[in-house]
Image (cartoon, rainbow, N blue to C red; front, top):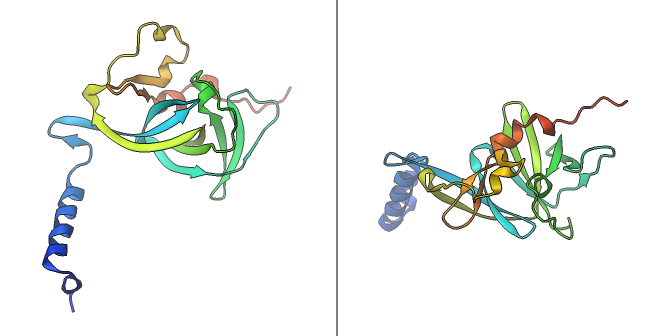
Length: 179
């Protein structure tokens, strides 16, 4: 007995259509590059975080504070048996801080050997948009020391984050030497 015999013709047609959609290249729409991003909330502001380096999202994970670390280092978390540094993305972006860390989520990103978690206030939906729709940052924002953390603005007002810019920032490295 074939697996297909368990489905009606209407169900088989739906499955064929889904398979065709899944087989299409997800990053191209014609010649235009498509960006997929997860919406995150930081201090009531919504940002778009590209998913290319996103590995996982976790809610209700205990973060253990580490004394004598910079303010942007929230602490460490045990994520699937791996101890991972947790950075407060609101502090890195100079966004308003939430009044409570109680409902925060962790967004795990990874590039090569570097993996870390960003603490965010909330997780939203995943959106896609053409890369050409990313506009420049508003006037005056280029004076911020954190502009390398931002790629640009979307038409809907969201700020697109530059995860590689954050991960490659040497000033975020905490020197483990104690004086």
